[in-house]
Length: 249
Ligand code: SAH
Image 1 (cartoon, protein in one colour):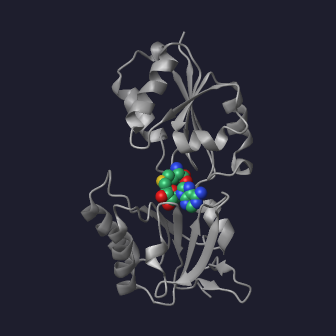
Image 2 (image 1 turned 135 degrees about the vertical axis):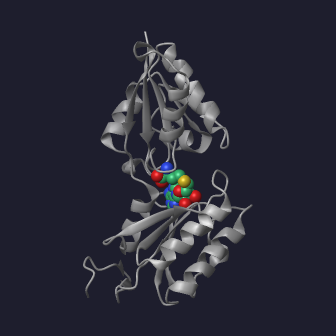
Image 3 (image 1 turned 45 degrees about the vertical axis):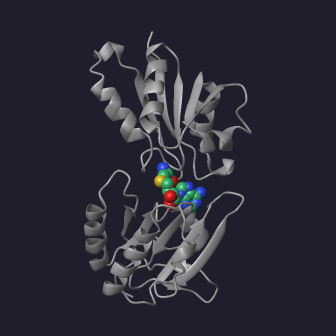
């Protein structure tokens, strides 16, 4: 008997940001697999299920463990932070399952359960920065060569999209964010609003509204989501980051 695999986004870290569907599913599965930090975030309300903590860089190990358990007939939840389909585990799981070349009747059924992605949690803390068209980029060069990322930054910089940035920096890659800012400043006004949110929805949440010019790039780390406004975005007197809905203003 094959089991089911549930790909679950648990939201950015606060249990109130976990959707009802995600919570219900987590309560009924036989096994929950995820990176240690994310399992710890849900541990306070899930004690009765087997929790399997994996290591940060061992994504494929976690994916294959989930598939193996499902093939043994268990119902498995594989969790990501935020949304599972946004730089999360949904893609690797579906691709690995595809590689196994199982007959249709042997294949575990997979369900993707959406979650609140970090960009949306961060936007809510800033005001309404994503009211018009936006582009999203990850600055992590672990899986994508930096030259490709830089090409994309250059093309987005030339457009008037609001920009959401995931994985802006890490201890090993401080220079990526500095380079991102340098490229943007060639195309966009230094006074363009920028919002930084650290640990959105978590205990150590911090919010900063600044500009491209004044942005304290050394403070950006791997727990930050960055939102750069378009040419019409502004910070109101009350401190709200607002992007007008229309193109004209
Ligand atoms: N699947 C996740 C994204 C994983 S990539 C999602 O949908 O949110 C990891 C990056 O997400 C981090 O480097 C950071 O930029 C962002 N991130 C994740 N959780 C965050 C949080 N609570 N606050 C701010 N940024 C967060």
